[in-house]
Image 1 (cartoon, rainbow, N blue to C red):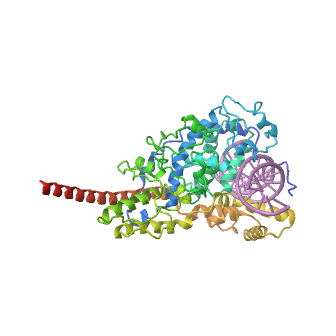
Image 2: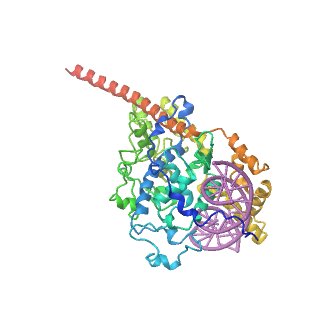
Image 3: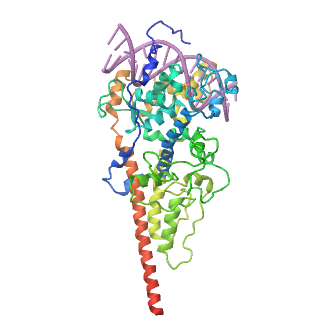
Length: 485
DNA sequence: AGCGACGTAAACACGT
DNA sequence: AACGTGTTTACGTCGC
């Protein structure tokens, strides 16, 4: 128990909260610069770095930016859209602001501005908010102050909220492995503090977290791995991903998922990689989208069709298990569980690459957001449990072990994950952290470039084959005609 | 009930 | 010195 409460300096003065919105530049948008991807190394290694996970990521990000619009509409609209999270008053028990359970039942009439929604607490966790804020930044990095600003801008609720939320933001940034500081050297001096960015390695987790919120453009069946039987309306991804009617964006757009974001100026968002490809490499046209294992299926069918001419039905692959494909519909790679590939040598080559990508990338797919984003709290809880009950439960023991490892502190959660020695004093750890990590700023760009190059390669290959086949067919046709004549 | 996720408060160190 | 930022600890609530 903390005796605490020395009158010492308070980190958060009551007045400091109001100053957050000052002097910030609103336009956090306009991510056009992603095209600057370094395409220097066109080797397979680059293209092979593309994976299902990446594709999922791209897809996710494609709606993330719409999600920004979505949350705009949410935060500024009077729509009565209260998430279950919010209804339950989850996690908002600030003594000063906690509404009584009746508030929700009463429609919050007395505490919420129904006209603007300004006083409605957003249904996003702080992690999600920070994530969106950073993702919405041109350089994918923001100082805390701008994170405050972004949140304030999109969720006026916080303007009048108790100032503790800033503490929560900082707390999240520090504690959550998904967020990492950018070396100050590389980024121009921005005064106090440093820039925060998303750790690419954990981006999936944040996306997953976002997907879990009831306000994202994915239908629930896509939001979580479905175990339901395969129901794949073939045209599903030729129109817009369906939104359930309660989704403000759905309503806002009259039932259509809109496009018109800055990165994706035109074109229906059906498939992240597809759209992004169009945006970054307009020359690359999307492969035909088939509902299941779209691109790979397309590749395979094209290759099989053209390469094994004369054979009636060169393709033997059966539709992959749909439960997974609902999610992998937008992936380059087929599910690894498809040993029966094709008989075509060339297609084997390509598919082998794809499968290898899957294998290669598999470990990169961090299990679930929850496990990563909140490891610290988990350990805290475990330790707390241990304190409470002197429990010897496995987690408590593990946490205790971790705590021991960390030398009575729990810095293992984030710092350890970054390989920073906990035995060093804080100051030295920070210095070490600054020196240690080679900057991976371009990683993202490279990944994007890789994926696109991969797509380009596949596409080029396909085009070649297609052209050759078409040419052949044309010639055959002409020959027949000339023979007839 | 235990656990995980999340929010909040607070103390403290450090930089500007 | 004041303030902002970053880290850490502690604790509460909620849902599963």
